[in-house]
Length: 534
Image (cartoon, rainbow, N blue to C red; front, side, top):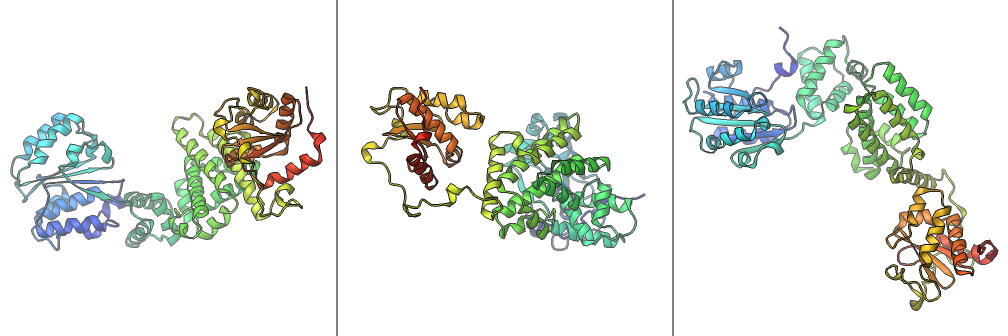
């Protein structure tokens, strides 16, 4: 009968375990020196070697000829444990034996001395599935077991294990196995099984394994049985129903160009070919994550890439996106993936996700606006889009490095006292002006900044004939610092006061930005543009 690869190549000694040197070295030293604990707790993600280590430790403590802490696998004790014929080494599945009665039976049997080997070993897998009463029944015997008894607990969810159990065990954490170690092990198994596995295909399988050796061997077993001849990445993708790196890259390229029709056409082709939409979005999420890493750390981030694409391909395509776009894309893709479990039409959800990725202007959420702004800023820096003339041309009568003089001390009005209008401004002046401005604004995002309350993002302070629109932060200042909005504010303030008033956008401290100098000069040269509407 055929035996699965992950069972056939299960590690038989501590030296065979891949990627867990810290754990295996400690256990080997304890076995060799005889300083064993009475209870161990192995924790870590799936397929990292917890159960295998428990079986190896059970053999090592009962081996008649241990070799530097490793079992010999040749003595009668080792062979009996490997075959499952040893009645003194029991492996218990806590998922199906999680009641207090099961633990009581275990406790009653554990007091008897072993009949075949030196120590009686209980391996409790998925121990977090035990009920609270079962954990309580297990406490006493774990704390003070007989000399011939050894407990080995294994779990993937450490946070579900009570602290009373944790404090009675020696805990060993199994880390995720690196892609390089998984790929090397897959190449070794392929050589032993006469499977023609290419290096690139081994890296693809290692990435899909997500740190679990068992998952990698299961994927290799599936792909090797479904194809003949050389096993390359294309055959791996076809066997597992994955679009693949190149196809996913084409989809991301269409999104970067805002080509909605092209992106939907690619998605429709993937769906018709039977590709798994969840796996496709997962590939896109991994690729987006790699883009963000390269944007945040262009040089150091190369070592942090997930391996979805080569460094050159990833770096070239990442230049087409801004950081704000990537952040929005990742949140949108992950939100769509999380909704797949309760969705009645995954295709529709995926199509809406692609449309929103290609057209951020469909929503006025802050994240979408930030994505559009950051893309425009990067295009201006790269010279793709020309910046506004007011931001590029300095005022002729002022030097570029000379800052605008701050108002006199007696004229300065802080935000804290903005509610107390100066003597020349009527009571409730700014509330009335903000209300009138909101009535004419069409953008909901900008309208919200002019809320007529003291906690709004924009506060108006009248200093002489100048209305300062003091913005809470630079993000708000970028929206308010526009001629149309400033002229609207000036007209409304002039109508309320009955005299011409000039509006200017400033930051919290009241400092006028360099880009506003030209607008101020425009107001001085064209006072007729500010009309009093009574």
